[in-house]
Image (tube, rainbow, N blue to C red):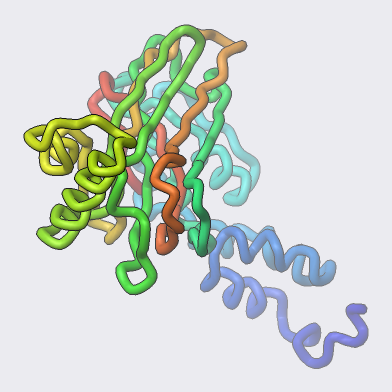
Length: 267
């Protein structure tokens, strides 16, 4: 295969490394499968130093425990796991937003998002919050305004449940939501006094927060990591009662951030 690759394989390895460094960590890993030349170029420190935060040396110097690594590629993946810095007052980790792929909801009737993480990957004796990171494609969005969604975060016997509203609120949304809840009352499907219809329902729901990076985040719940090596954190967001088709939701992922250590530094 390598002999059929044309002139690209005649390029110096440092040139290939430079090109790969302009892509993403995911693309770099994929390019390793092209040939032995690409594998060597994609693993070089030139590539992976470009993916590291500009202040990574400062972060390493402030780490509570020394971070050992043999290459910049290994360092990148070590920093994808939480690292305590500043005498344990802060935790840092590389955000997966650096990866180029996200999940987009095309068309479903039942909305169900689930995630899991082993508690041993998190700092023990620490309270964490789980945050859904997402966007709503307003041009393709439907069925996300109402009913509201339900989130659950569970670790062992701890269960944190909340009603949330993933769609940004506006006057039209409130009007449509009010009509929906009154329709349910009229059909006898849900006996809710008019004073407690969509308006109050939305007020009781958690709203998303806009982030500086252009995404939104919704706190799904929290838990205290006291399960040692054997626990598993389960997270979910669901809406299965509305019966309408849903689309336009773009999911980046779920972030876990400590709530009692001064917050997680974003990279």
